[in-house]
Length: 86
Image 1 (cartoon, helix red, strand yellow):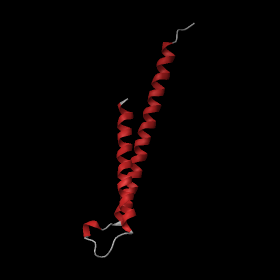
Image 2 (image 1 turned 60 degrees about the horizontal axis):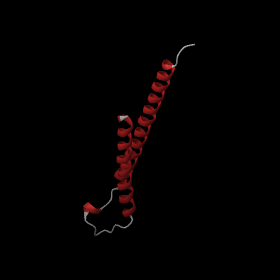
Image 3 (image 1 turned 30 degrees about the horizontal axis):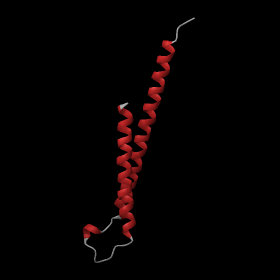
Image 4 (image 1 turned 180 degrees about the vertical axis):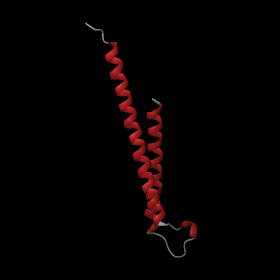
């Protein structure tokens, strides 16, 4: 069951990264020329961050799907072996 916990943790991290990046992009239109450099948003980097968050999310979804398939296979195999033969 650890695969599901790890996948869920990865999904939550990817979601948080996506939310942070989306928030920074939303603030990009509010910048002024007088804003300090550390407050300026580099859109190209933020879009790279969005793509990375999307890929991390997809990878964690895939790990959960694979874990589900594995457990389904194991339970199915185990139930077939447990049935008495007639």
